[in-house]
Image (cartoon, rainbow, N blue to C red; front, side, top):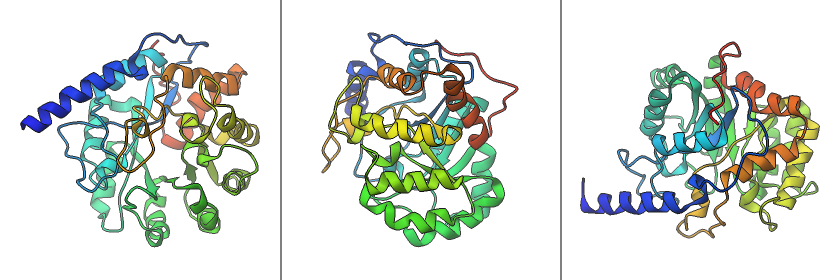
Length: 312
């Protein structure tokens, strides 16, 4: 290991230890059910080199760190999302799935160069979707979306989208016409219920074709913790419209809050506050169970007959 890597690892460990992500102050405000799934988090492992061109190069955050987070949140299933930092190199993702076993799934990033054999290998490991992200390197182009969707449809995968809000409405017709389910990241970056991008997400939900991650409330609004009131209005709107196609995610370890290059950082959130915020969006216990447990079983293929016990 180079001296630079040693410094990076030491700095990463100090950053994680000091962040709210692993603090022990906030307490869970509700009983997290068995089989609850964190449907959006990232792993940054020093064994796997970052893409040199990546805009986000956050501190390392390993599977061991994530297990500590699960112990705080109570979640017992998880869906790792390939971060932009690794581009189309899914080796870290595959390693995470091997470490976490049958209670984990993942969403990869591949482009049109991916082979059928690679797709089969990813599926066997636990991958259930392809992420398309504009604004952070764009490893998948707009022209590749429809051809990729046709290739992954026979495997029962979905496509997951994250992009600046002004880029979402122009893709509305394309997304509605894809032959796979469409999941929109982080509330579609909506901070109210009147914006064009909120309305596009609602059209996807209302069509029965779209899903949304009610995650990332801390990312884009002007109002702060603990309620993130502006983003929360969008979350409540989505949940009221289509609770059967909403999933929740922590977005740990919050790469946007680690002083990303050329981007404005956001304040580091407290992860327990984020899941408590979700419980305030969804005060009904049965509906919370649906979003945390049943919906992830449907879209990611977890076994409803084998729900792991809550961690907390």
